[in-house]
Every structure is written in structure tokens, then in C-alpha cells.
Image (cartoon, rainbow, N blue to C red; front, top):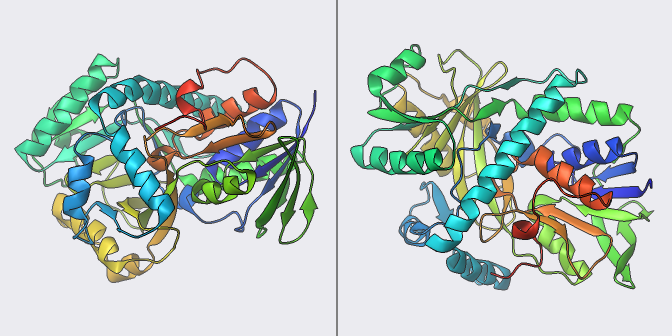
Length: 415
């Protein structure tokens, strides 16, 4: 049965939800507080990452976070603040950072990433799109023996999970990347990963959805949500009132602010990331993570993007030049003769990634609201998990058997 669906949030999760919902015959409207051209879905590294099987809330991250808290250029920075939501999230993060919980999360994260990669390839093969998509794997490049040992330990866990992983010498990396001029000791290579140019996909998807009569309301913020009999009856925005049979909440870092209006609490903190585009030849052809610096490097359509940092400091879009410089410094240290210019640094952009405490997204319906489907909390895997999340959302709303077990992603789960 066709339903009138309102999607709050026009990022990768919202658009992929719209894509699969309109395919099921539903009438879809997407609303966003921006103009559908900025945010984390446009600034990210464009990775599809079955390799990233370890959640952010892993053993040892608390200690690293404490150490890095006093270094504003560190890869993972948490700004301490007296905020109740932040304190609750921090406690839940601490509870989640155990070996047993990480072990349970690993196959869940791997399976949804692989499923999402397959769906991206299906979309690409549909002949409705012409976006950039390549599967060249991912190089985890390291400069120290200690980092190399840590990466290979993760690589061996990947092998155990059925991923293709190799431990490469510097010479073997140079054979793969002959023109990148890398200054490293070696790399762990995952053949499972793919990469894209996010802005290409986003603009093409919006054009496609509009051609399928999906409505878009831009620069429009949801101000209030009215609940009657455990259901959303009406939404008020800055421009109008809206009524829908079903609502999808895919508002990223703003999602927890909106769920509060429905009496639902989902712990989310915004994790700011930065991206610098280098629009000249770099010789880089394979996506690469600079391990010690935690910087992601992606050869995109016409440029190379250097992206990184996880800055948990509330919802703001302030560009911190210290963190931008840290990314530029990493590029220079890992690639001989590659210097990111001042002009390139000045054009750096940031986006806010919605981080759940346990590293798993929220996908599904809360028991507290019958016609609300929540799809958020993807942290650094938002781009990777876009199609899988959208497909699951459409299956939930269309009352179909879901392609994956939703229990690990339940919005009401306890931490």
C-alpha cells in the first residue's frame, strides 16, 4: 500500500531512503535545513569500508582520548564540557568500549558494509546514474613498526572475518602506487573497499529523485513534532505544517534534538571532520589511510581529498585551523614533495558525523512512536552505509522482511 512519507534530512541516508521508498511506490518528500549542497555527506572521504570492522568505542580509546584531550591537533579530540547529553553519551561510550561488545559488533559492521557495497554497485549498474565509483581497495600506510604491528593485527582479524587482506612491504606498496612517492615503512592492504566522489553521487541522486516526483523542501527546519496516540500527527517547520503517514528521521547530528520532541532519547554526539581538496596531480590512485595521523586520502573525480579528525565538541561548524594544519602536515610527512598550499587549506570544509556511543547506527522504530523510523548515528560510516540503511528503511515501512537483522541497530537498545 502506497504511503505518504516525510524524510527529515537530505544527506546520504535521507536520499538513499528516498531512493528505495519511491521504488516501493511511496510518495516521498525530503526536507532539510540546508540547501542540499553541504554537510558531512559532501565533505567525507567517500569510502565504502568493509575493512572498518572495529567500532569507535573500542578498548583503549578512552585512554587515547584522555591523552589527546589536551592536544588540539590530535586525530581524536573530545572537548570536555558540562552538558548532560554529552555526559550521558560519554558514560555509554565507556560501557561500550569492551572486548566482548566489540567482538559482537565486528560481524554486524562487516555484514552491513558488504551489503551496502553491493547495493552501491547495483545502483551503478542500473544505468540511471553516471557517478564515479571504483573498487581499488584501501591501503593502511604506516611509518613505525608499532603501528604496522597494530594494523596487521586488525588485518588478521579481517582475514578471520573473510576479508581479503595482505601485509605489504614498502617495495610492494611502491609497485601499486609508483607515482605517489610515499614515505612509509609498509602498508596493510584490504581489497574489499571501494571509493566515490560524494558530490557527484549526491547531485545525481537528487536529479534522479526529482525526476521520480520526490518533493524537496530546502532551507526548511522542523520546529515541532505533534504526537497523538503514539503517532506523529503533524510537523511544523519554519515555512509550513506537514502531515505524513510515516516519518523517517535521518537528520544526522541533529537527530537526537528532534527525537526529544517525541519523548525518545537516542544518545548522539556530533563528530566534526575536515576535508581539504587538492585540485592538481598528486600521483595518488588508491585510497589510503595514513595510520598514525588518522588521515584519509581519496583520489576523487578531478581532485584528491585529504580528510580526517574526529572532534567531539558539540554542534558547530567552526573551522579550527590547527586541525586543518594537522591534516596538511600529515600529507607532507607521508608523501615526499607533496605540500598542501595555504590557499588549499583556506578552502577546507567541515561536516558533522552523528556518533552513537557503541559505534552502531540506529535503524528502526522505537516502541514509543509507531510511525517514526529512525536512521542515524552512523559516525564515520555514514557514506559507506547509505544504501544499506535506505534499503532497510524502505523494508521497515513497506512491512517487508528486512535484509539484515535489525536487533543490533534498535533505537531503544540499552548501553
